[in-house]
Length: 296
Image (tube, rainbow, N blue to C red; front, top):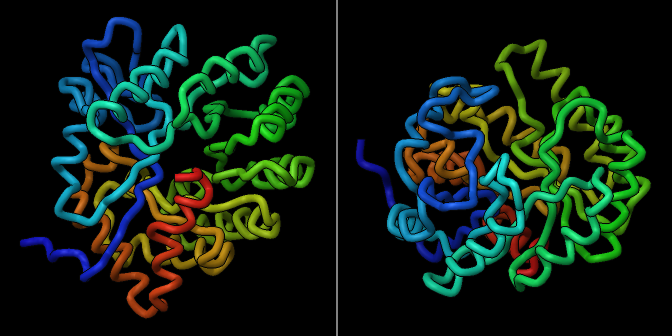
């Protein structure tokens, strides 16, 4: 079926994309290697490791769909020096005008966290830190000490927590009200059962009460590979219900979610689900919130 064009004057700022060059001498992309399985998605991501996905590839793919700006979120997982990715992305911006903001990796539990942040900040498009950890790290003393640096340096926090961790995330957010925390991928819902949905929504409701937490609606294909508008609708609508249009933002998680849909199909789904929203609400969800959060 042919994809429809976006509505007239439609503008999308995509706040969650990944670019990678598998031939880069110092960057390692641990979640999409051609001969390794992803820790959650399994062998599906091997196809991503068989090719590069450069900023120019993204621009070519998304230019028909109204995408005007991007935020790059750490892709080089497992690289020896995370600042090398920020450097590479800054060079990409100078070459082709994207990404417009960079969220990089810093081990906030490490003794060199502040030094690493300062090295990232030598590059003008660096905007935030992704700590891609799991388990009880949200209550770890060293992590909390490192997290305090984000407020000091005016950086955004990017966290991929699941619903069972929302109480810990809420406590962290209350402790640091000056840090904007972007909850990635709608709290990573893992199932599509009615029982799981209620558990997920309860966790999301808890953290949504904290004003400095915003919800990035993205990555819904990772646990729902054959997704449809109706299968993701309850999750999208609940995020917006809980966080409001002023603290929700749409993103693509590209090219990871390209494993299960086209870019146009994903945007069509978001547009369709929000069809009854006012123009100002849609502008917040698709562009303004991302621009404000990441300063682009």
